[in-house]
Length: 185
Image 1 (cartoon, rainbow, N blue to C red):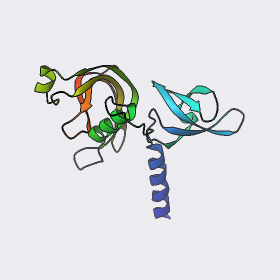
Image 2: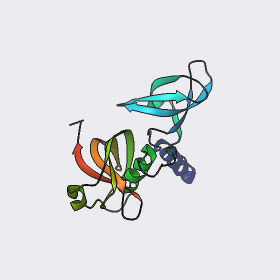
Image 3: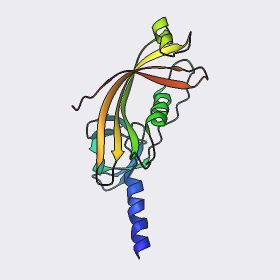
């Protein structure tokens, strides 16, 4: 009986650990009693804008009004020259998300918003920071929340990072932080 209880708690924790990110697929029961699916298209604080699948309709909901069914960001094909939201999300998650260790708690990242700015060829100052010569650098503003899961609490720290996004010397997308602000402080 004890093992069943532990298994059920583990399943609940796994399900609840699905992060609500832009691009996450969700399921919800609407006022009409029907179950609908949709996609998170925007996040503002504790509100999530859901675009209903198959309908020209969206609504702002709180996280207790829907269930995340898949938090994989849609894999947009990159044109190669400029990054997509999926490209940046993949890099941020790979850099920031870590499993628990004996010294550190589990960390996940929720991407709240990504805005792309102008693109330019790398200049001398960028190259001194490690950006390859001739790389096309796209300026980005990345709004994300770092989630740390401790035994007795979960901490959420929101950050807004400006960054250079470019292809590194291996042809893979890289995100270099140029400035970070903590808007909740």
